[in-house]
Length: 429
Ligand code: IMP
Image (cartoon, rainbow, N blue to C red; front, side, top):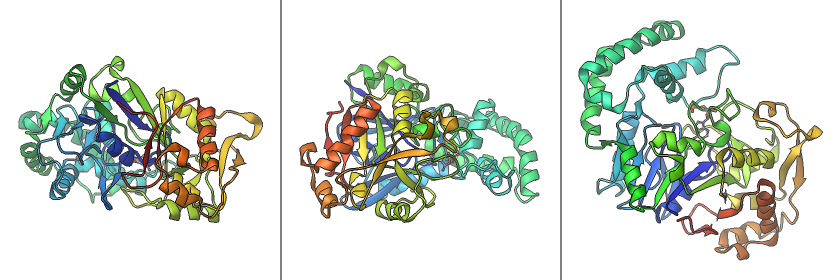
């Protein structure tokens, strides 16, 4: 078994950074296939917190190749700054980074449009995006006027593409920005020339590189971004991101086939969070929600926005398991849930509807309390556990319930932010 895809099984922020970092120690290559710097993957290494937005979470291991795939959208300024930071921290010293020639580039007009639409767009149409230009960049791509990394190396083609984009974008910038924001082709070209020089040594045919690694029997770890319920096709549309967050997208986003994938692990927190607009039926509005936010430090790694918190939604998780074809579940932040005096889980909805994602808005959840919760030392015992058998009985019962409901076996449990606070049930590779 050599190719493992790891995806978020909720609304993002499930702890992918920590899980991928833990798995990356066993991988030869880590690749990301979708999204951009809307993601924020937090790693805690020797007590030091590192947040990556674009570079795959394998960056902490010397010699592990980190690949940004064609399905991603890349903001070169953010990328360059992130790489400089990681290198200053002693990472990525040995040329371990590659970028697909076919990844699309986020320009300043994408970011401007994203922000203006959120600020001045039609009421009710606001998604609560990260304002990083992700949606507009994917729009350009689907509209077949997007600019790829490879286009940065051809100034004549780049100018023509920018002028084409200007025709489409300038009127909307004018309408929403009231003349304050302009589309300046020459300024974009000047910035792009700097990016091209920096990106050239990193740019490659990433699909061929990954295919070669798989054929050579290397251990390839594929890292999703965001989560199943933010998927463009199968999430809570329109309150979704603009890319495929599901495991199926890994193939299209990297340029490999489905037969190359051996396992798919889905990550879920032991509770649920959501940031941005859109339905979240198991949200807790009162003091318990606040407690959970505080205990779990539930603030966006990218935007700093407070996340809404609630109980784990089992029907939604079962849906994510289906859409991703999950072969293993990773449950994170068990230690956080264990700090609460009481806890519950959503086991269905009033009226017995198994909600399709469209019906989630307004659906009334049915909660079941978690028995045995609230013992004074529950969290300490969870944090200290290094084997499944060392977890308190109440917590093990909860894990069993999650696996029974979703029909997916447990692969990994995380009991704290530290690297050592990871219990492997499946060996991954
Ligand atoms: P966009 O991806 O910036 O266009 O934002 C679209 C929606 O996805 C918003 O609700 C964002 O809050 C959400 N979103 C995007 N990336 C992440 C993430 O990494 N974690 C959690 N939510 C995200």
